[in-house]
Length: 311
Length: 166
Image (tube, rainbow over all chains, first blue to last red; front, top):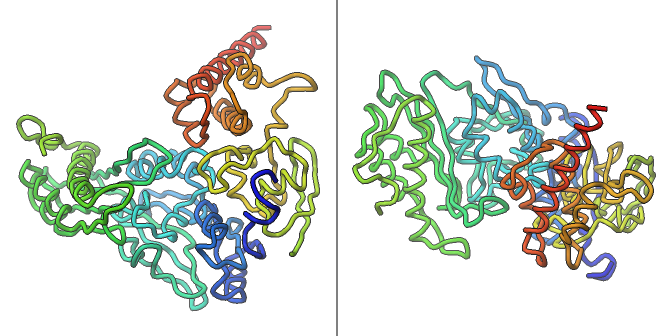
């Protein structure tokens, strides 16, 4: 090869195993021990293994486990998305596009088209990046991760899944098999936005998502989540509390945005400063509230002179 | 080093490749199958020089393990030409528009653009730019590439409509 001696950029010595059932995957992971890693789309884990950021000696390919490739929607039971299903399969689905536009917004900008041919929702969740695009959307949509492992099955709400940068609740030998979303209720809407210098092939400086449910013009319940502004994507309960119980007003939206700014604990890095990220947490909260309301058929009031560019 | 045999259809031909278990699909194509049209740029999914079609879907071959493609269908830039000495309209358009300088990114752009036109024969300029965002070119400034893809799309639409009319 031109750029390097043979083997120099190769992965560390490793084995590959294809699991065709949940039990087989659990057994392979148990035998493989801590250096056995689940392989779905590979867009994060192969790079991490190649760059020696992750100690891997066995890839257990779970894409042929039927449950990881499931995609089903039911107006009562909601949406089940197999953990290894690539993004393009999810956002290409008519039911997902109709009922979960906030999810579509988030996964349509993970990497670029070519990455979306492989990258999965389960992978984005288990990679547990603070800046993960899909996680705030999953949090506000009240999604849960269906986890399997040597001690059986369990379900963990996505807002409790990540515990720190690259860290999550998965125990030894456990993996995510699917993500479960409740069915959207009537007069509800959700939206997701991020800020990046490029529109695609970029990582969020900050992102946010909101879901709102209205009863008689008042906000019956709200969920607001922010990402890339702390060690993990965060459900901001005070922001939701600022909206719940009354109609959307200029003041309630501003209070929700202020709650997101207060909840943000960002770092300075090459993508953005603390000040910029905190500002964005508020701004994207406000914008996603407006988008979510519009999807629920409610027009959020604008402050005189427009709200979005005033700060 | 542990080796295994991977059976796959590559550019329409059934192939059995003896690969290192840690080979990426990119490694296997270049080092085992002798198909060096597919290029290695960043080896981490940013540049798109290694773009291929896996079961018809655009992927970065550096982010696919060779062992994963057992039983799959792979199309590389070598599989684009319509017949001996008959370039794909995208390849002709890249030549006509001079949509390349050093050429390292070109196979990835061609495969990626083919994947776009397979699903969307009449893309807007915005759609072309968005689709090709995962393919980096450090020479051309992209405009000539975009013109070539738009031109090829038009040629292919005209060919399709004239053959329908015949």
